[in-house]
Amino acid sequence: MKHVEPPSPEPSPQIPLFMIGKDSRGHWVVQDKHGICGGLFVNRAEALRFAMFENGNRPQAVIMVPGVLELDMSRKPSPQHRQPSNAGQLRQVA
Image 1 (cartoon, rainbow, N blue to C red):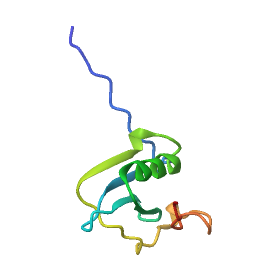
Image 2 (spheres, one colour):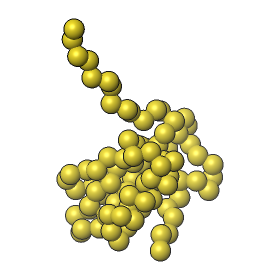
Image 3 (tube, rainbow, N blue to C red):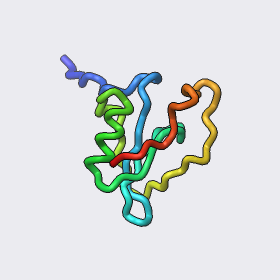
């Protein structure tokens, strides 16, 4: 009998996928895959806390980027990814 591994859990299309990494200046960056939500953080723990809060505490929807990750909030969301007018704005984290 052949042993089959269960599939890895992948985030559903409704769960926001977030990338975490450092920019070229050494700041911690969080950005969702659509470029409509994210920010700069003082350390990895705060970046991870933000990403987990935004995606409903789903670690499978957080990707640690090994290279440089620059924050780019210039992209416009496509109609299927639009959020309410106050959502998707950068939030200041103390």
